[in-house]
Image (cartoon, rainbow, N blue to C red; front, side):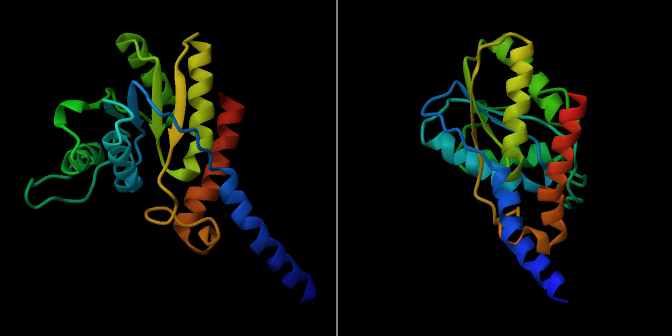
Length: 200
């Protein structure tokens, strides 16, 4: 019994560290664009953060990637709207001009695809800096992936990364292990990071 109690106490101390280790931040005072990574289940917090950054005058343009996810049935539209459309709508409702929001095509299957798609856009639009917006537990892998792809393509693009604090659509670091979503966002991120390390 004492062994399991000790194990539990160790876990309580270790679990928040596992979560916070995934979070990195690299702010940029100015950037050519903001890139909001696709995240169907977390588009609300990501677009809120992107709109805040845009309205602070950090960048004049917001790009959205499309992960292909679709929301539930809309009675008004009589269809299942793609989450990327909801993200665009959310940005506009928060005061970002429609002309300053662009959805990148084609749709992507993961972070590595987003990095490759952005690499093409950066070259075409001559972008020299970008501030990536994603969820907190995704920041470390996202930044490393974009750095890798840009380096492979010999592109000099200054990268920043920002995220809304955990707690709205993602669980706080101290309590993530108490919910299924927490295991998805934190434990799942370690599995994905290992996969990226092996395959990419």
